[in-house]
Length: 385
Image 1 (cartoon, rainbow, N blue to C red):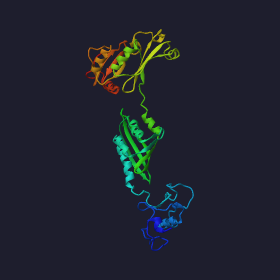
Image 2 (cartoon, rainbow, N blue to C red; image 1 turned 90 degrees about the horizontal axis):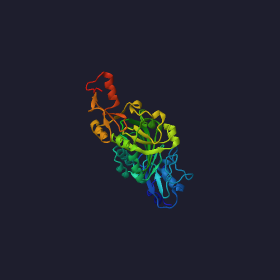
Image 3 (tube, one colour; image 1 turned 135 degrees about the horizontal axis):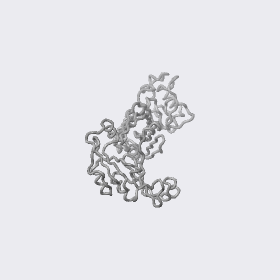
Image 4 (cartoon, one colour; image 1 turned 120 degrees about the vertical axis):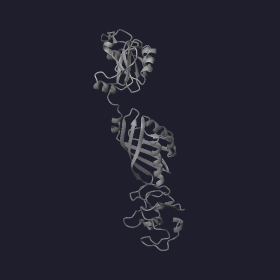
């Protein structure tokens, strides 16, 4: 078979072992982009002696140089141990620097655009860098397949962050994949900081990302995501669940579980009674209140009718004491002071709910109260009660 028909190059003027005086420039393994030559014959060039001679003339036939085997295991497109990709039928791939022709920095640019979209919450821009059949694999989570599913995946997993950034600290680039080492830093919407290191591997095809695989220390992240220890919920006995649900809704609590009747076994174990109805409501900070009422005989431990004897008062933080007080009174509450007062910088007032439980509304943190209480026996502006 003619040399020119196989390679697309004119026949060299003279063959030398080093391949220096050929009709085409000498190519050094590891320098310059790979060159792909398409032949018009139908034989598999991996089994063609002429094809091997082409590669040897390009610098692959010397001792310790890159070599393509004449057969053996592997399929076209595989990367073998010597670093030369096994050609597909009808093409010869000359060794280069590991970047496919026409890619190089462009491949990295695609991944850079991915991180720019993630860090700016511009998730719609990911459609420009994802292939139609893209897959997202994250350690400890189900795989996500397809571009549309991937576009909805990232807003969901980052919804809990007020701010976040993936900072690439190292790039490792190959022909059809890029590996990045990541330092993630973010802040949850409740103010807690989150930091961890991760490894992202990107598979690419035709200038688009076909697969993203992420590894990170799941236990380290889980420890940071667990809310700090604190008050979980309070149980309050009420006479009318519907009325109390409306009252605590006026204070900012959202109904999480509608009223349900506990079975005799569950009621007996939890309340020492035969019939108990329970509703759960939650405040924006995550704390909750459990409202319960008895449909039958009241157990011995709960027969005292004075709520203050069991729960002197329940403190609830609000953003606007006066507005919340007005809403509470409209829902059946009764103020115990004529007007709200101050404890240091914190505005406060006491009131009763429809069942007589004493509540304290405050617009400051518990720490602010403690700071004032620990520095002055009677802070300026304190309401006497």
